[in-house]
Length: 117
Image 1 (cartoon, rainbow, N blue to C red):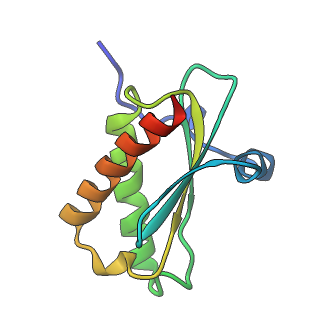
Image 2 (cartoon, one colour):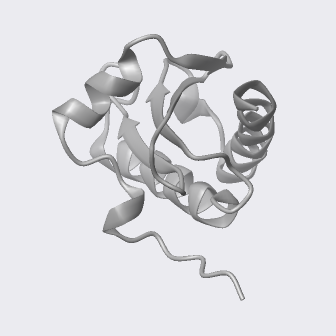
């Protein structure tokens, strides 16, 4: 049975990990967010988040978005290739409700999987 946890090994932790992803990544974009990905040497994907105050003013909104992205990643991690992923928020993401953001993320994970294979 597959474990659906989101442990420390599934996170991008250091600035070097983020720099690696920002150098020549595969991009998946929507008007509300951008997903950057780059292959890693591990056997599983890792996630990093960049939700700025510029795109979401209130901390409660930034936390909601990060929570939903982490949950979506946790549920889809076994379908994703071995890549390092950075999710970057854009203006307008706070206008989406939880259901719409979840649908947008599911669609983006599928597009990312197709582009990385």
